[in-house]
Amino acid sequence: MLFYGDDKDNSCCRYCGISRYKDAKEGGSNTILRNVLRYFPLTTRLKRLYMFARTAEHMKWYKNRVVTEGVHTHPADGEEWKEFDKNYPDFSQDIRNVRLGLTTYGFPPYSNGTSGIYSVWPVLIQLWQCGVETYDASTKTNFILRAALLWTISDYPGLAMVSGFHSVQEVCVNRFSGTWKLHSKERDDGYGVTHNWTQVTSFFDLPYGDTLRLRYCIDVMHIEKNVFENVFHTVIGSFKLKDTTTARKDLEALNIIPELWLNGSRKHKAKYTFNRDQLKLLCNWVVQLKFSDGCSSNIARYCKVSQLKFHEMKSHDCHVFMQKFLPSTLRELLPNDIHKALCDLSNFFKGLCAKELLLSDLVKMQKNVVGIVCTLETIFFPGFFDPMEHLLVHLVE
Image (tube, rainbow, N blue to C red):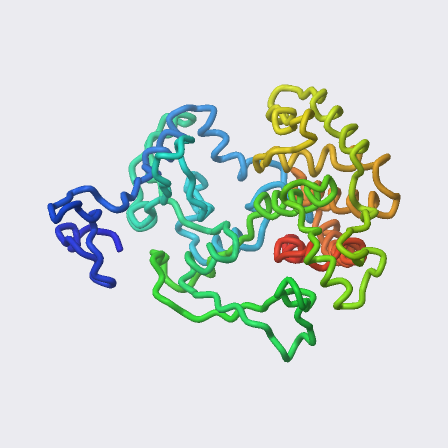
């Protein structure tokens, strides 16, 4: 709970009874707070966007651009935006009002290990109900700025938190006739588990009531990073490798992919993995990569040539590697069928992240991504797959 308003003087949580302060040593008192909410001054930041003529014009660009039927170049082309305009015409009349997307990921603002982990959350009630007086430098006039939350962007646990639903994961025996992998204790049922949702108290209540359906969006970059790391580390055989002895035992127990069964305690080399010479070629190629300004960070710093290892890349580095370098990197190092499947995966993310999205192309992408996932299932072992690989089929929608 927040110790705010009527609760500002309380010393214990009214739900669980735990003190808002850290435990004191040797029976003394302590005034050090357990957690601190770092307030993000959203109102001030939005007002500043209109203080400069150039950024003020950019804020209104969506209304002044050329719109082509069937082509998405801005969220204003989407159904959620249009539905919102229809339900709230008083808000949409002023094109300077702002529609927001909220990502539910917390982040550490400092890199050292001793600092706390802080989350940043905007406060919207005033911006929605009353608005704030704001100066528009492009027209040299004042206006009342309002804002509304239209989307949330999260993974599934974050979705449960922000929507006020608690996810209960259980195996759906009516839909799937899966079997338990005997050694890894995981269920092989195609799409893993199903989600049953039960209502719980939400900490986030929409100020504009129940008439608007808030759009919950899966974070594409988050999924792309996880899929890339899964593929990349499996191919190079790194410390994150899922192709373990236990996973090979599962194959024999399930009577699938016999060429990967254990030979005693020895693992046969899979056709989708590099040998040492191939990995050395890849490392030498990566450390020589040069990028134009603004394209990417220095990906070479993630590669240790002497150890033939890669450290974990940041989200944008995975994004660049997945869409720009993965096809060319693997062309001469993997069999044609595997290379083609991973090229299709790369092209799917590239198409999804394009600046212009044709509705006709989205229909094709939705159809193709199902085939891509099925092809990957014929190449990699079952333990390779986690929910991220199967969430691909929901990204287009």
